[in-house]
Image (cartoon, rainbow, N blue to C red; front, side, top):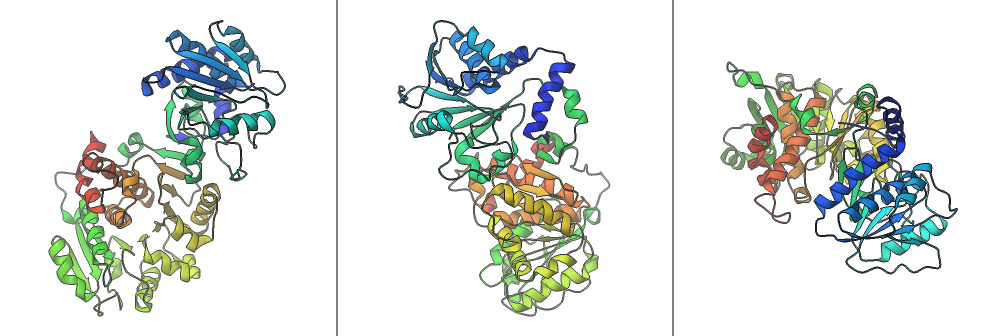
Length: 502
């Protein structure tokens, strides 16, 4: 799915009005019907609503929703939040359409908002119609609402939050803290930033039927990884395939006390479909790995406790991954350096391999083109500098992918894949239970296995993060977020691949 910016979505609205054609007030009515339906289906237990409406079209949506919820026998009150008492044309139309049964309050700064604890607050003050911090009565109202314990639903975007860049938001800013946000037509890029979770809460999307022609002809640098995209990537296996068809991968992993990282990564690599796997490990790890992963071959370091020495004939491997559990011994650092200089296909760098790169930043210039880096935010900041906002980190991620010709998988709730061409793909699968030791080692194994099967680096990243998250989601059907472990993800990779092809 292509993701559009706030400005592009606004243009999409206008394109629909002109080319469907449809009156703007009728498009607002269609949107309100979809939003009302979503509220009714997702929250059937809610029967009382206080809808806070601003002067623009987001407020118009709110007033139309109020009317429709009343028709569903819900108890409704509308709060008008308007400093100048002027409205957009469509908002004024919907204000005039409000039936007499709805109590209308005109908010002022002197007012104290008193609501029954069972009343759901619907935020339709600004939505995406503001690009600065709310002021005056708008800020007063939002701050009052945030202090109330009532369940809050935001329409399109929480008021005060931008669809993209929110670096202006301070800890004291007036931004609605919704429990659930219902986005119109598409999620916004800001939904994928960790610091905005307290504003967005959970979110869902309603399709209001904006013109498909605009979507088809409009380019974007942002994408949401969904099943349709994955369907076009996954290879179909020939009946006459053999193990050589699916590549020979090398994983460099493990050190004293961290052989488990090598085991997890190796098992995941094999479950991703690689034909052959060799694991380069410290000598003491050999009995453990050969017992835990009998399908893998091993290549042994001269040292008992860490990786050491040169890996011979590196070019014979279809893909190489390095990092899980390797530590940062000086000998291990030399292994990372060797691979950078002698292997000329993409390498997957994870964990301590990233920390070694962070200590030798000039090596980034020499990474094989198309290599994949898989940092979590802490590792990312060690590599590329400290960041205080997710949007800042996203901009740096894009810049570094372009500069070094690499793919960066920034791991998180919506893991993002940046490309040398300047695109970003946000993953749609996964859950908080996957925030557990070894989960990243599993992803490294999957990515390495996919590269060995001749997926392009972009295809490997997109398919890898999706199937990794999907296996975690399937695991959650049998575990709790607290009990889910990395092995559960590996054990459900088969079902994840099955779901993709269904």
